[in-house]
Amino acid sequence: MADFRFHVPADCFIGQDALYKLPLVLEGGPERAILVADPGLREAKTTERLVAILEGRGMQLITFDDIAERPSSAAVEDAVTLARGSRAPLVIGLGGIRALHVAKAVAALATSDASGETSVDAWMDGEPPLRQPLPLVLVPTSYRDPFLLSGGLVLTDARTGGASFLQARRGVETAVVLDPNALGGMSAKAAAAALLDGAMGAIEGYASSREGFLSDMALKEAVGLYIRALDVTIQRPEDPQAKMDAVRACFLSALGLAASSPGLGTAISFAVNARWGVPKANLAAVILPYLLESLSRSRPEKIAALAPLFCEVDPEEGAAGAAARAVESMRTRLGLLKIPSRLKDFELPLERLVETAEAARKFDFMNFLPRTMTVDDVFDFIKTVY
Image (cartoon, rainbow, N blue to C red):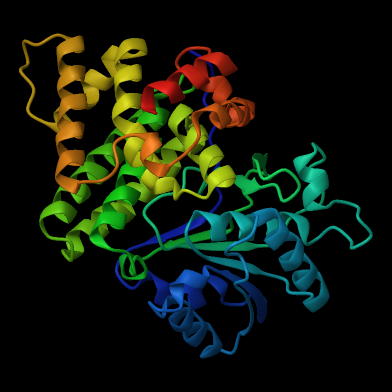
């Protein structure tokens, strides 16, 4: 067995009202920060709460929330200019995946000088930033981010409209705060889709060719928590236990994926989201049962090991039978949610999804799939889901 090395330097705070501990995380640190916030949080007043908490302790915040309705690389460019101009020594990301990834890019790029030494376009073209990033605090408000602890991020390239996977320095995340009270503002159906998205990433990491003993333990537990939270959400959308399970699942999934890797479903959902604007969570809900079927063929023993988390399984049943039960159980849950079951339901033109297959295959983490896939293989999978 190869030597094992694992390093996640981020301080992680998980629990009810963990948001109130953020001043303790920053105690003795900078007194000024740029806050990259999801504009969709205004109604839930999550941004307002965070600003009140930090400004109440004397911190000056510069809020940047112009990240909707445009490519995320354009938002990064403007936010980096703001961070450099204000000389903010700290970046805080608050929101869903898009806001967190924009914040991560800003932290990585803001320490480069404004002469074009490193720009977001140059990074997407293969020239990563070389200087030490700014300290970065992430406060997720959704139930998932496969790259929360691994330095990874996905941006939409404003020049092409396609998705670009970037790898910041390992350890770019200084702190992560997971508070179930910050996971608000979503409908029951949207929350369920986000849970399915989180479960998809965890399942991919569990079946990845990069998996190991740590990722197996963390990701198997994460899948169980995601499914339990999903079942509670379907029955009792406002049950606080579902949010607590989701927060723990989000952390364990991020921990496991930092040692393993997401896979095909994650790549396709990011690529479609960037090009066509379909919410990533909705795409994951459609892709997941087909992905489970595919993994049942390439890694039947892995999906069989997860099957008891989805449904009752006969101990005498073989791996193939147990895996099939897991797939059927997932389809039953999706039927209860009454959400789209095919990509064509999003009015996507099949002939244009070849571009999606090409973009998805370019992501670095696609090299760790359970089996090697070409662009044609990825497109064949897309056609199956279509």
